[in-house]
Image (tube, rainbow over all chains, first blue to last red):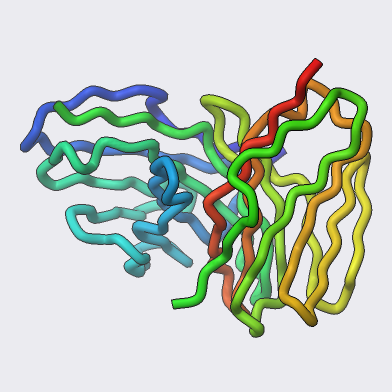
Amino acid sequence: DVKVTQSSRYLVKRTGEKVFLECVQDMDHENMFWYRQDPGLGLRLIYFSYDVKMKEKGDIPEGYSVSREKKERFSLILESASTNQTSMYLCASSLNTGYGYGYTFGSGTRLTVV
Amino acid sequence: GESVGLHLPTLSVQEGDNSIINCAYSNSASDYFIWYKQESGKGPQFIIDIRSNMDKRQGQRVTVLLNKTVKHLSLQIAATQPGDSAVYFCAENPGGGNKLTFGTGTQLKVEL
């Protein structure tokens, strides 16, 4: 089974801190994604990457950056955490097949910014 | 922009009954659809998918129906069990590429 592992299940950070959320997948998937999930808003795409060192903005990239130095690892960075970034963050990966293909998700990181 | 939506935010069913979860989509270019299940505290899990050249696909206890005429997707769960209690999301791939658009989810509650 493909596994997508997020390094932390729960995080509590202070406003203004720089926060790193790590995601690792073990099935050589080309595509990796970061979403945030908020009640009533569903999953919203923050950033995605189709290849190493490649990144593209999603629908809500403001306040975030990403890094993909290795194929298996995709990091989400909150440059200066704010309370409105309190959320569930989900990482996902998929094959790059040229047509629609399902994602495999990690278990999520619930981030609280105080 | 176009988005994926759901008719009902919460669905309650009796154990053993069949469940039907609905989803409306608005992007006529979407060619691939997926249903995900998300249990409390966990990430979404793939349940079943369907491509736009099909109108029905069956899995184990689950069936997905696609009606392209009215842009409607449904997930049917047979003999619903307590373990089926979760939030169910539909997702669409709006034509090419690998990016999915997700609905807001329906909470399925199974009553004993």
